[in-house]
Image 1 (tube, rainbow, N blue to C red):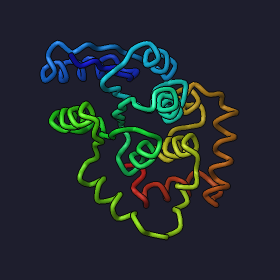
Image 2: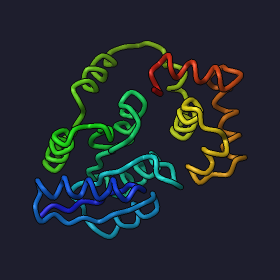
Image 3: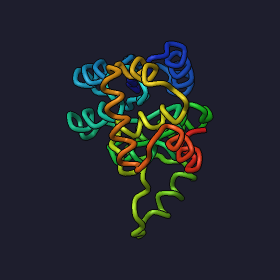
Amino acid sequence: MMKFLIADDHTLFREGLKRVLNETFGGAIFDEAVNGREVIKKAAEKNYDVVLLDISMPGRDGLDTLKQLKSDRPDIHVLVVSMHSEKEYAERVLRAGAFGYITKESSTDELITAVRKMAAGKKYVSSTMAERLVSHLGTNSEKLLHETLSDREFEIMCLIASGMTVKDIAVQLSLSMKTVSTHRIHILRKMEMENNSQLIHYALQNQLVT
């Protein structure tokens, strides 16, 4: 009997995942979490076959939650299910210990394939992501500017580039406006830029936002 922890702050999305998974893994047990704190707590209390994790929930940084999960339970199988494109976050979450990454636009078949692989102890990446990872092997090219950012800085940079204000970002991430503003300053300095317009142009040019 499969045991799943579904971590996402949108009720309808959690219900949709449960329905799809139950059709394939009949009799599965489902627990739910709406923020990073709940994810850490529930994963410490019960063994799950697969944790389906959204990295854009309110409060604690999703990537930080993932790293804490892997620190507490190195054998845990985490499938990140995100609204962000593979190019934005896939490599970061895989480096942080996730067993797989799919977007919320993925097909039902891809979700089931990913879960089956992970339940068998194997990692899952899409064919596109596999090609990208292979292309990076053995290369000595310098890091792109956005690759120098911390996970939190990268998240905020993408939100800025998508047109969100400091206030909007603070609300979405449950941070103070001062904290978001400080991150923005660090981002601009690391990216060698002066304003949001340059960030937006860079993000669009590198297909980090759509």
